[in-house]
Length: 193
Image: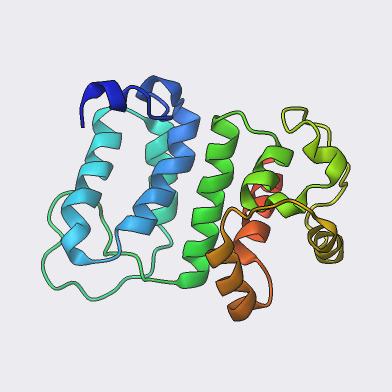
């Protein structure tokens, strides 16, 4: 791989992130990744970098997530760095954190709710909504209404699916496309921040 390819990747540059963005993203990423003692050096680096850069907003957000963190027995002295043990693996909590990050990044990339709905499940959009995916206009007032979603999916003539395997797995496991619901709920919470 060379820089010709790297420069074409749809990745936001570090300069695109504000302190508020980092305060939202970093604690969630840390909680998702720091789940075992062998990740402590990474967690220490994140903690120390927030302090070193003087990212007060980010550091306070990190302290907020570390503060109520339940203690677990330490296999070794904590040493310098993050003042807590690894986060416990909790599938439901992890699903919410991933959904919050998905919704946040959708906003950072400038997507509308309709475009996010399209990415999660193209069958969620009505024929009129699909006519111009770039127009933020939505025919659907409440995309979280399960009955409305089921009607739109049943009526859809869209030829493809985005996350078919994930959707089918979650339909079997939870009786709903849980990721879609969690991401759209997180989108709504972000709209009211």
